[in-house]
Amino acid sequence: MKKVVHQTARVHWHMGQALLPEHFYAQEKSLREEVALRLRLSPAPSWGLGTLEIDGFQLQKGIVSIQEMSLVLPSGTIVDIPGNTAPATLNLNTTGASSALVYVHLQSGYDVVALGAGDAGEEGIERIVQRVELSSQPTSETAAQTFKLASFACSPEGLWTLRTDFLPALVCVGRSAPLFEEQRRRMRAIARALRQALLDEVTQNHLAADGQSAAKQALRGVFAFMELLDDVEQGIAPHPYEVFRALRSLHTDVCVARGIDPTEIAARYQHEELAECLEVLLGALEEQAQIGRPSVPYVAFTQREGMLECALGPEIKRARDVFLLVQKPQVSTKLELGAVKLASPTRLHTAYERALKGIPFARVDSPPFQQGFSSHVEIFALSPGQEWDYAIREGKVVLFDAPQLAGSRLYLYWRTE
Image (cartoon, rainbow, N blue to C red):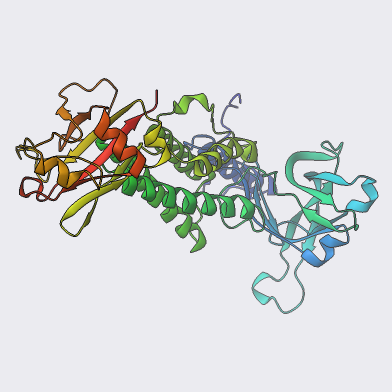
């Protein structure tokens, strides 16, 4: 916008000058231009809908009746119903359509209103009241400024409702009820689903140090986002860009935790297309909340009557390679498993009595697969053979809970490819 010379300059007042209405109009205009300049210099767009109250009963019949609204236009002009603007209505049935976008047209004309008797402090003062027109047409020959307000749809039963897939430009989030309510509900549902999914990942995949750390970081982002939603529900009204940025940050954390490139989603803030830019992130996060992260293919040994046992599911039976994972209580703990034997339940005692090796296993310093296990974990490769075949048939692997395993947790890990 090209600047005009002296457009923000104040009127020079001095003793003895004749006071004319033009002086006050010029003073008012300079103040308006100064406010508009401040809005344009704000880091984020500072114009849009602030508050809106629509008569829900009348709306069902197709009558949009706005009795209260606070709106800041891009120029900085404030439309405040009923403060400085008269209420407005629109009959949607006259459009002849089953859906309609509604625009607010600020008229170039105005009404001069004198306050009623009894207002002694303002006796003789007349006020300028702006006029707005609600219309389904995007332009108006008599309008000085126009704002796209809301979208409405008519059901097969003939009832009109506010569409939630459209959002106007907003000054703040949370006060323009019922706008943004559907997005807030979806955000809350996404946060709850992600929280549970990430908590499950932290619990189930605690051997994978990198994955667990990423999941915890994403979980922290979820809690921070839930706190933002709590603030909104308590009456704090952040700028929509703050909500968008928090949602985008949450999406980035979840993508990193899942090993996905977050830049594949081209999410950019668009003040005049709020619903669209939020939908990109909401849809992606809803998908992530549903699919979850593939769990690491391992199963834990459980302790029972002085023994450690692990059930062999069908996945392990079809595995190409199987490994024993030992999670030590301390990184510095030295494992000496030379006397420890693995076998099927019916073969364990026989292995000790006849000095058999049981299921052979050997420490692997450089495993033949990419892994993110923590430094507490040591890996041992199991060798196939007759003893392993016994375990497959019986569906279980067991070993004695030996002293050298005190404080350690054991797992079987497998690869099918």
